[in-house]
Length: 256
Image (tube, rainbow, N blue to C red; front, side, top):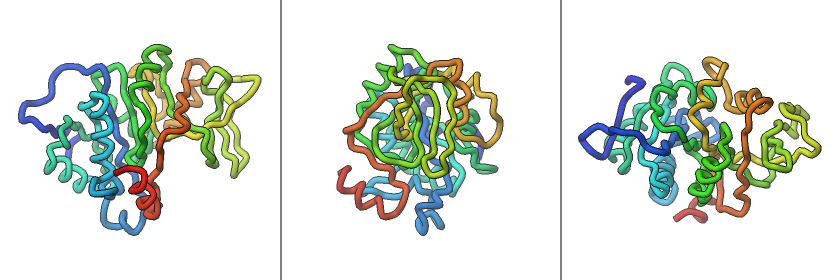
C-alpha cells in the first residue's frame, strides 16, 4: 500500500479543488471494541446494516463533501477492500497509510497533509455518529476564521476542553487525574466535552511542531496561547460514540 492510494466512484481521477474536504480517522486499534477488533477494524463495525465508515462518508456527503481522506492502520487491507468494492460509497477517497505505526489524531492529521487541497477540512472520528448540522459548523468556521472549530457538548465525561465566555479555547482538564493545562487565561473556564469532530483551516497544518505519534489535543493546547481556536456547542443533537460493542445497540436506536 502507498500513502497516495485513491479510490473513486468514477474511473477518471478526481481533479480540481473543493471548498471543503473531509478526513475520517479510521486507523485506531479499537481496543475498547474487542472482540470485533481482534479480526476486523472498528471502522467496519455495522450499525443497522451500514458500517461506521460508510455512515460517516455518507454524513459528509450530506454537506457536499465528497473528497475524503481516510487513514488506515489496524486491518488496513480490510478497509481498503471495502472502499474499493463499494467504489468509495460514491465519494473520492484518498488513503493515508499508517500501517507502519498508528500516529494518533495529531500525527495522523499531519501525515495526511499532502493529500489536502482545500483550505477548509472537516475531520471526524470514524466511531462518531451524530445528526449535528455540519453546515452550520462550517459556516461558523468560515465566518470566524479560527485555526480550528471544535464540535462540543455539555455532556458528562472525564476529559474536557475549557473555553472562555466567547467559546475560545483556553485549556484542558482531566477530572479523574486532576490534571489541568491552561493555555490562555480567562475569568471563567467553561468545561465542554469534545465530540470528535472539528473543522480546521489548512494553515493549522503548517503550525504543527510535533512529529510522529501525538494527539491533536497537544497541538491545540500549544497553539491556543497565540491563536484562536473556537468551540461550537451542539448540545441537543443526536450523538453517540460507538466506542464499545454494547454501544452498537444504542446507536441502532438513534440512527436508522
